[in-house]
Image 1 (cartoon, rainbow, N blue to C red):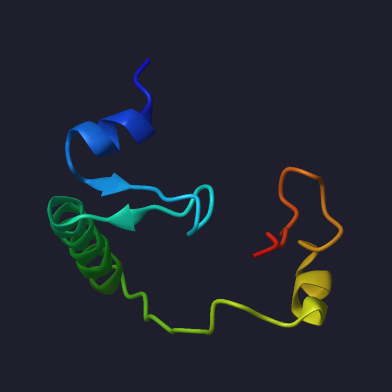
Image 2: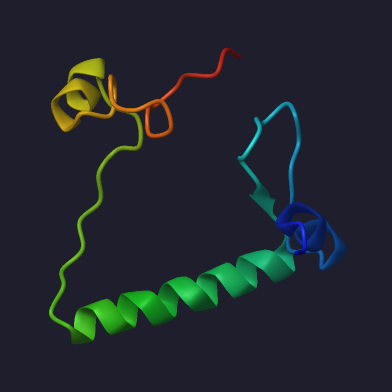
Length: 84
């Protein structure tokens, strides 16, 4: 099996930086083009299926995660904060 992190770097799609954070890639131009094409394809398919999109802020109050069950949920799904 190939390591997606290595493939991303080798193919110049994305890279990571410890200052940004583990698991938070930044997209290089070729990777951004691939990502954009995939997102456009999915959005078009969703629209054809009758879905409508909304946007919400990424961060939220702790109460939101408690209500959704993500704050105290199983360890694998729990939302964690990374110290900066």
